[in-house]
Image (cartoon, rainbow, N blue to C red; front, side):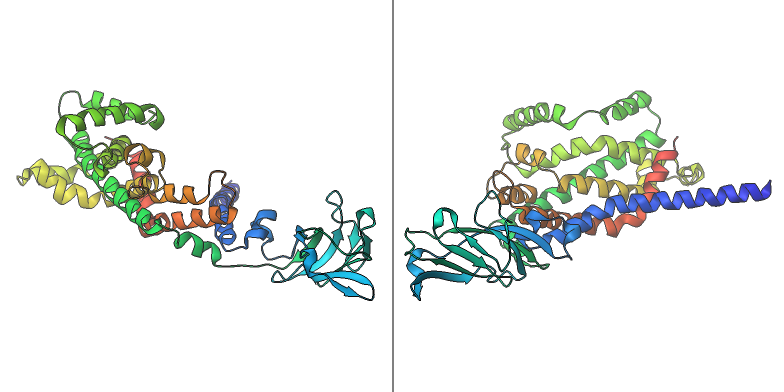
Length: 385
């Protein structure tokens, strides 16, 4: 029986480790994909996934020959020549003279143009020769269709475009101005409230805690407009402008307080009772106990909530637009990056680069505080008082 139990524990350990590895892969693979895509060439990114970034990719390309004014005469034939791969690298595998069949001919073949307008030859190295017995006419060149095998290409142009965009620095500072106070303020308020709910006896404590737990499930979208109206009414009474940093700090504080109080209260309630009683016997007040004992012991829980709150505020766009606005001097980083994408969001190279630029700061915050994260969450979820 002992051997059977040991085998079961061993298999249980393997399953746990495998589950952890799968979870890590699920969370990290998309981030790796965004990072790789942010360095890829725009044309390659539009036609192939990041997992093919180290392989040669086939791209169907529409090119255009120079205008007829560049034609030359050779042995009674009129010729337009050039190279479709100039600056792109790779080699041509197929080409066509009709958009309906762009891979009709192999590289090196000679194809007849529609309507007997001449012939087209595209070689593997990209050189082409457009030949006609009569002069080419018109003001623009002829379209040519070809498939090119293009080697992997990485570039810093995407980052250069994003980081040197007008207003990006101001938007970065705006996001920091919003995120740091909107993380610190709810932690300070929630820590006081959590200590009171955990260790101080007063009427209605259980009801107050129940209300806080209920607020955890209130959708932000449902309370956003009522909260904005209330803030504007109170601000008008005291003469405070509507679109200020104070408004967005208070908004994020209100949305973050229920989770902060619940998490910190459960953690603080699990602290050893003997320490509290000894401090009271020595004549310490509740404020002294909170500052000198509770806060130092609650660093894991405080850091856990700080990570969640900072990530939420840094990546927020909706609350920032509603409470702060979207003028040039008020736009946060998420809003600025959204504007870089254009109205249809078709610039994939900007999308991936912007995504990675926006997560650099949250990653730094997470890795600097991650050693407290598991301790704080586990303690806050299983301890109670």
